[in-house]
Image 1: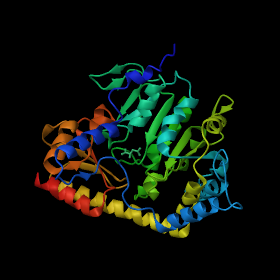
Image 2: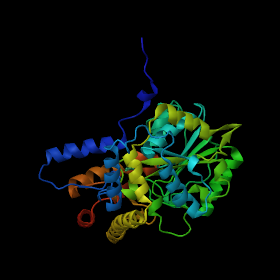
Image 3: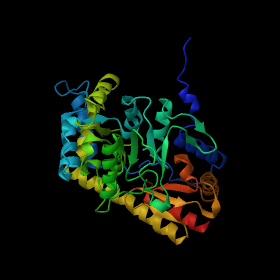
Image 4: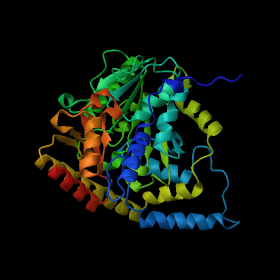
Length: 404
Ligand code: MLT
């Protein structure tokens, strides 16, 4: 008789954003006349930029002609895209990442969930608290998290690194020594960023203790301050300890198109086994690559026109972020984030818990955000709003919140 992976049964509730969608749908069905403004999930709203669409169209046409038709993509992704990434995201910033250290995928969510597979089940992971729930949930599924404490909302075998106002929402080096450290900067959900010096401390720590850092840089395009690193490979020594995850979702609006990549430098080794070779083996076995047309679209993100157009989109969202920050501050909220990231992290007012504030805001202002506790216990009294809405909706949401 078959047996299930009962680690799945340990997971409390459903995935955070599915739970929110369910609640919002129920509210909207019960209140059909209300205009709900969704600033919950970090999903983009601007259409794909013209240079990218043009490239997509061209690639679709190529697939319809015998001479240019393509079947399976190469294991690690097409060279044209991996070269564009290596040149623009790494070499242009002085980081020596080679095209063959880049693995193209269908997004950073899958990669951030799957990457744990190449590590032994008895590794201890450390995560920021609050944290993007995928890192934790996938380690629970793999049996790496221990027992769940429903009261504390924590897992016994996970090391939590609180990110609070007192430490500018950046984690301190942990007291217990982890084997794998998940970091995400600019951060989801707090919108906080770290300086290069702070990140260097993490790289030094990982090299000193033999830990691997899984560095999620999905929001890199939103960095506006000079001393904030765009990639962990700006730090010395990162090639021997860090894996970097990147996404086309937030910088180029690919949430529905799906494209991302993982960087594993060849020097990152456990004994004499390179993680690059393990991930290559996994990629080749379990994955048939992002579609050719999507990889061509990704290439167009790096073209001159593509770059100008996606920068404009990022600026549009960051104008929203500024509007939210300033509006909510004026209304007396305590807010942070929103400068190097499209997320605004605010304190729930009047001692409300984050879910209480979620219900209150949905009911009284018809605005949807994300309760901080969904990202971990240290998010309990916080709330996240995204800057990915339309400008008009963002303005309206802020005005509604001011009137509460
Ligand atoms: C979020 O809202 O945190 C993100 O949209 C999640 C994701 O990118 O998967």
